[in-house]
Amino acid sequence: MKLWSLLGNSQKLDGGAMFGNAPRAMWAQWLPPDEGNRVPLACRALLASPLNGKTVLFETGIGAFFEPKLRERFGVVEDRHVLVESLAAAGFTPDDIDVVVLSHLHFDHAGGLLAPWEDGQPPRLLFPNATFVVGRSHWERAIAPHARDRASFIPELPALLESSGRLELVDGEHCAALGDSVRFHFSDGHTPGLMLAEIVGPETVDGQPHGGVVFCADLIPGRPWVHVPITMGYDRNAELLIDEKKAFLADMRARNVHLFFTHDPGCALAQVVVDAKGRYGTAHEVAELHARALAA
Image (cartoon, rainbow, N blue to C red; front, side, top):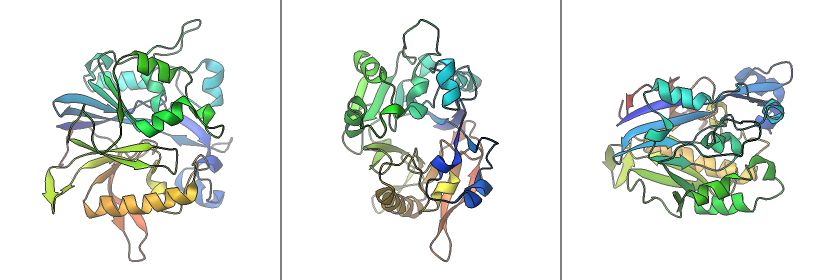
């Protein structure tokens, strides 16, 4: 099995919102803001093939579904569908994808499911052969969102996914489409039912898989958020998220599971480390993955 990190459309968002409880003097050193106080963010997907005999895409980024006015409002940089271009550079097309795994349905993680915006045309799904895998509890949030995060969802998307006949809702650690090759972890601090997909590693120690890769989604958007107290203003429950993140990092470190970051503009993959004071950090950082073996 090989892994690719695929860049989608990039985004610029307010730094204060991205680092909700950290002072600007601190976070500006991690991601220097522009004149509008916005920081650069990637929307990075992970491609794995063959995984359980399939070509699997973990998330799709924000895509190019916004009309121009909204694209500017939400800081989307490019007006074309960058993920499709990244797939092509890796030798794939949307038609080649057998499974799309979605941590959650906020537009910056699921918007790439949709074709680019065209004036007068309704939204339509790409990936015509893919099974769409979503956590059931998050699905329930997406179809009846709270006022706090209603604007983060694409109103038309749930109906499009359901009508495709290729939607699989996940309740536990595994799904039918991927079997034991992917193990799911769940978090509620950012949004109810956030689903973190771990590609199971090649080793087993005391009955537990070691050496895999986990898609961190918005539990840990990038390296600065590995520091346990750092949360986003977008998080539903910051204290819960901190507790979840601490347990998650301890587990990933103990099993040597590498972290895959979707929003970090400079790093796709890293190993979890902890210093003498118990503070978590990263090592062996990798900017891009190009047909990288899982165990590499």
